[in-house]
Image 1 (cartoon, rainbow, N blue to C red):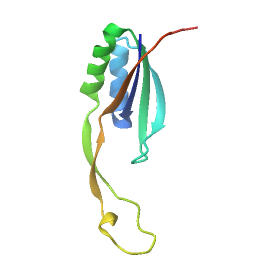
Image 2 (image 1 turned 90 degrees about the vertical axis):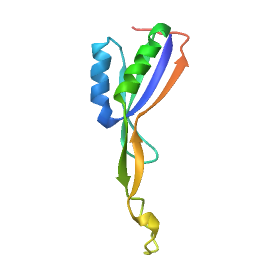
Image 3 (image 1 turned 180 degrees about the vertical axis):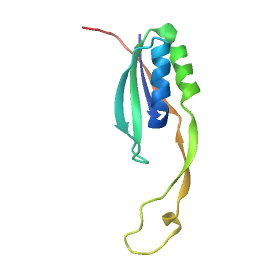
Length: 108
């Protein structure tokens, strides 16, 4: 058994959850917040048999896409205008996935 922890952007979460249901992949969904952009994310925890790990990873990879968006950095408190005051293009989305060994799995 493996524990898959997948962190995806909220924009991809509903499609991903629908794919999990369609493919009979049990998951637990958590609302999380990213540290860099402080944007909402969704974290899925999935307990799955070893032979289905690739299937789950393929689903996540096909649905969770990277995209570019503009972000305005925090304004300087000294009142000056700097290059950091203008919107910058950043890459968001995709998925961060961790696959961990799981010694035991219980359902009560």
